Length: 492
Image 1 (cartoon, rainbow, N blue to C red):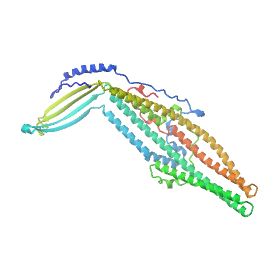
Image 2: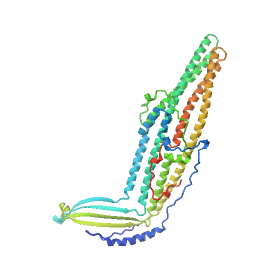
Image 3: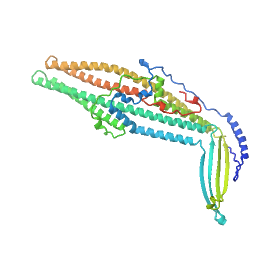
Image 4: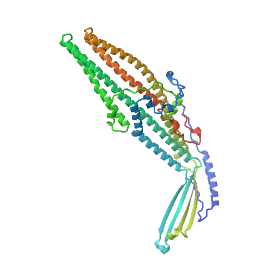
């Protein structure tokens, strides 16, 4: 049960000597706090961070600045325009910006608890039974201030500071994700367009072969089996066209929605066929520890742990005494005009101290709630760090292997093209059978399609690697929330 001490009220004079018993009461209450249980400070084990990336990739002095607007490295003006437009108009970016404004406003609400509260009031009362003297008019100011001696309110502000900074980092993470999604959708679109062009070219070649076969059948140089096989080959290639056309349309829709527009808004702009954008081969890799500092999601997880630690301290402060002082200053008169002249001045000072004596364990349980939340935040921070390391390693492996695969596919496509040309010439001369022509044409189509897909895959690997490395978001632009004790940053 809270205890209170209320010094006497006086008109026009405050009894300072009456505050002396408050010191005695406060000393007794503070003595009762000595047996309180301290906040648990269980530290989590930090995941092992490798000194360098696997696979022989050497790290350099690269920083987040080298990844700013990485999409410009693809040298595609339309891609740059789409990414810039999406970062401004995408609905998920707008949601993240609104969440950041909300977090900053909530921080201001928490900071207001450190300042005194001042209010004004006015009242008029009439007592008919008292005759003409039954009117009373009053106006005054009331003030109160909770002394944050044990830092509970300050810890609340620290938590709100960290939450606002985490929200800013989350906004950066959303922007990084949106830029990567735009680039991947754009690469998918250009790849489908290239594959459609390859399919149409092979379809035309197969149609020519069918016509030659029909002429040979009429001349008695080939059988109807050859003509039917040629027709089947043409029909199979033509069946691939709707699949690619669907992929092109869906990629256009995805890009338009990412840019905050209706699905068909960019159709005219994206109908023109262009090559798959290619990134330069040189990539500046930072050391793993530097990469973790560059990633917005890692930074956000760290700040959430900082906020959780501050909330533990804030909850623990509820066990300690709270002190509050307040006062009022007002005017009282029998008439409304008398408030400005001849009014009676009244003043009062209130000082109180309270300490929870018995609450059924509610405060202790609340500390346990916040401690568990801190443990969750620390575990989430560790998981985010491990996931970040995995994403970089996976992207490096994929890029390295897909480059080797592309080189082999290009060699295979060149050989398949030569084989198809030779088979067609020899078939026209009657030197090979039609089955040889069909086999070489299928091999040529498959090899060329595989090369187009592999080119897009290598470009997509670059995008995923840029995203895994931090995607251009700069952690230095985010102010670290101030704390009274730097050693209380979350152990990861």
